[in-house]
Image (cartoon, rainbow, N blue to C red; front, side, top):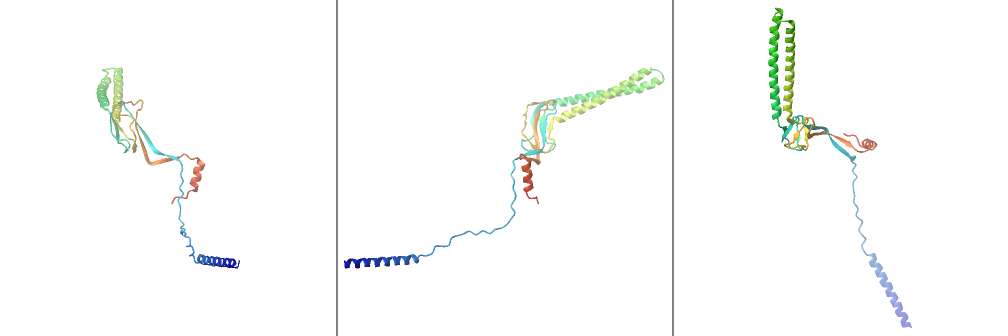
Length: 231
């Protein structure tokens, strides 16, 4: 019995000794490193107020190029989608018929001028005869009326020549504005009509442009007021 108690005391002492050693080893463990942190410097600066609104960009000018004379398209003179200047040829319409019409109008003008010249000579001759009472006053008045009619015919013939010249000029279709020429609506060999105003192509001017916003007016106004003034 005594031996048993001595062994128990010895075991207890050894346990206390091991526990003390374990505590000493735990106390000698290194401390954990300090936590890593990121440092940022606050730098005040202006931030642009970007407002995104749905909208649509529109050309400031749109010209519909239409036929002004009847005829057959001979050639397309521009490249689709390219920029053109004022007066740039776009299409060539067959000019042979309009040239013939111009020649006929000039011939009619020459004929009217010859008739008017002859009527003027008659009036000059009748004026002396009526003074001598060689002819009646009625004959002289008829000669004057013939001269006035001949002069009116000359004016009409001159107008016809100008109209024929315009039609011949219209056979070369030119751009009335500068801008971007669109897709051709007709091809070579197509018959175009002045009375129907056949659409040939369109030219749109994009410098400057219109921007149309589809947002409600109150929303657009609030966005404009909240944006900083432009500098």
